[in-house]
Each structure stands twice: as structure tokens, then as C-alpha cells.
Amino acid sequence: MGNLITYSRPNTSIYDIHPNLKTLTNWLREDIVKLYKNYIFYISKNFYISRSELRRISRHTSLEGIEEVIFTYFLKPQFKRINIMELLAGIITYAFLDWEKKIALGIQIFDFDGSKNLTEDEFFIMAKCFTYGISIMTLGNSADNEVIKFLSQSVFADRSEMTINELIMWIRHNKILYDIFQYNSPSIIKCEKIKNTRFCNLERKTVDLKKPTSYHRRIKSSFESKREENFSVIIDSKIVTKNDMILIKRRFDEISDNGYVVVENMFKILKTAGYKFEDGLNQGSNKKISFYDFLMMLFKNATRNQISRLLKFVGMGEVRRASMDDEIMEKKKKIVDPKLVSTYKMMFEKYDANKDGRVNLKELKNALKNTFTEKAIENLFEKFNKEKSEGLDLKEFVKMYAPENLEFP
Image (cartoon, rainbow, N blue to C red; front, side, top):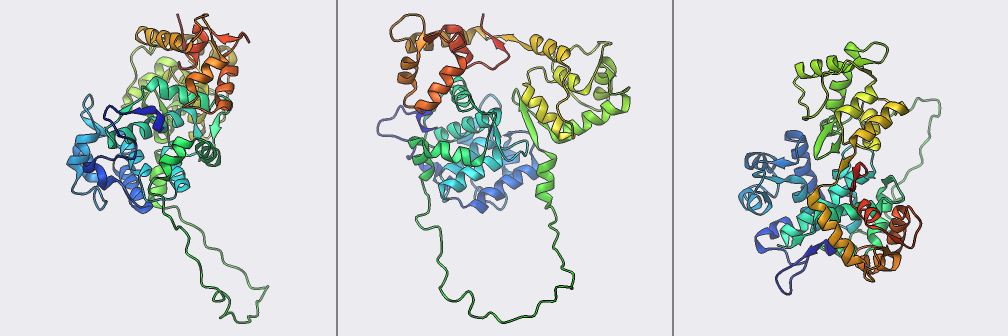
């Protein structure tokens, strides 16, 4: 993520932490986990937290007493809050931990749906938070969301999920990222055991094979239970938790007739339960739909993968009715924001070195050589080169950045 950050000050890099934020370095794993657990217990349903909430989750952690300093640097003026995930990402980057343990901790925190893997949207949020967290701690300038989105799509060009081992290998082959996470890595992480002491006190024992063996049953901790309740899928920056889904499914089952409900009745009963909806939803329809179709309507910008993960929260597999699903997906398509169109065009013209109206593989490799591996660029080019021509046209180029439900005019 280091090549997604630029600096206006000379002789400054991702290793130059601001003196006022030095207290966020050299944390141990247990310190980070304590802060994260406090967040899960006391907040959990929002990434953006207030001053008072920061003070609450900082109790008995290394942040206690310096909350005002942290709030000043990590503040998002438009929200008047800080993003706790950006703070955690910055702390993990400069923690006193082996680099692989930093990655494992990152996946644990950003694995919102509890699958133990990262999906593309989770990876995007993680990459964004690490980029922003590092840039805040070093007073750098973070790349735009569109660039980070491009990174996510390139990484997931040939996969739907990323395991911890795949993430470790991906970072290991990216020198800049590897060097960043090596920061503050302990030089000695293993303690040698004294030889010949392990078995010196062993005695011969007679084992009664007829005697029943007792097993210790592990009890789920209160933290694990709380975290499981708040497993979530992030849709358009909105956190949809497992508890939310259980509530929606319960209300659906109360009024369903053979697995179908009238749209108007479903919205009414959810309103009564205090559930809030986005503007633009057709809440007065008399059409009968399934639970899957209702989720497609309720979360209009969700991908099929996100809907599938929401269904898993309530013990359902993906039950798809093609006609309804395709109809909704078609309605979901939106036109790219006009403000972004000019940005995409400028990037396209910059990448199109020979000005032939297409970005060929060589030009794409040249433009992205400092950001992605050659193999990743080739996979990305192959995925979006729909016409199998010698280069990407403007529309194909934009598709690399825009979500799947956006259409370029």
C-alpha cells in the first residue's frame, strides 16, 4: 500500500512516523486485540466513532490518556468522528510483531462475515484503511478510492475469495508491501528450549484402556459470541449484521405464505420493528416475492456474492429465481458519476502512450509496473479485454475501476 501514498515534504517516507503518533508504534498483539475487543463490545455497528466512544474503548489500553491527540489526527471533518478501522490498521502496520502475524491479525479484524477469508469488498475496505492509516501516521497523501478499488479488482481478477496464505504470498511478492510490514518485526521470535529436559522426568505409567476418557469441551467466550452476533457484510458503506438478518428473516417468516410475502406487508412489518430503509425503494408493491428476491430489492446495490453471504447468516443457501434476479440486477445498473467520467478519461489518455485510442498490454504494464506484478496486470487485461483486441477501449478501461452494476454512458 506504500506506493498508494505520496509525500509533499522532501526526504519523507512511510517510515517517518509523526512524533505525536509514536505512541501508536511498537504495540504488542495483546494490546491491539484488547482495543479491538473493546470496540466489538461497546460499538461494533459503526466504523466511525465519537470522542466519547474513543475514550470508552481506550480504557485499559495504550490509548488511554492520549485520546484527544489521536482524535485530532484521525478526525474525519465531514463526520466529526474517526474511523476506528483506519486507526487499527495504522497500529498493526507499525506494531512489534512478526510480519505474518500482522497479516493474520489484519484478516481477523477485516473478515467481517466470519468466513476466515477475505472477499473483494472486505479486501477493498482493508486496503483503504491501511492506506489511510499509514498516510495519517506519516502525514502523507493517500490515493483516491478509485485507485484502491482498481487494486482490489486486479487482485480478485481470478478469485472470489483470498485465504490468509494467499494474502501472505501476495504481500511476500510485493517488495514495497513486504518492507512496510517488516517494520518493527522482532529480530528473535523463537525461544529455544533447553535440550534434554523435555523427557528427563518421565515415568513409566500403566494405562487402563477400559477406563472412559474425559474430553474438555471448549466454551465459546463472550467476545466470540458478541463478534459472531455482529458478523456483517458491508454494502455501500452500510454495515448489515447477522443480527439484522435474523430480525428480517424472522419478520419474513411471520407473514410468509409458502415462502412468499407481499412486498408492501413486509416493509410495513419491518418499519414497525424500527428498521430504516433507503430512499427510492418501491415499498407499496403488491407483488409476492421470495426472501432472496426481497434481499435483492432491499439492498439494491448489493452484488450476488454479498446476497449469498447474507443468506448464510440465516442458514440459507442461495436460492435463485433467474427471471426475478436478472430483472432486479438490470434495474440496479447505474450510470457512472459524471465527475468520475472526466477522471477516467484523463487516466485513459495518460495510459494510452501511442494515442491510438486503446490501452494495450504493454502500455498497461508500463503504467502499473510500480503497483502490481506483471502476472496481475496480465490477468486484469485478459479479464476486461472483452473484444480480445490488441487493447482496451475507454469503456473496457473504465470497467476496471467501476463496480459491476455501473454502466459507462
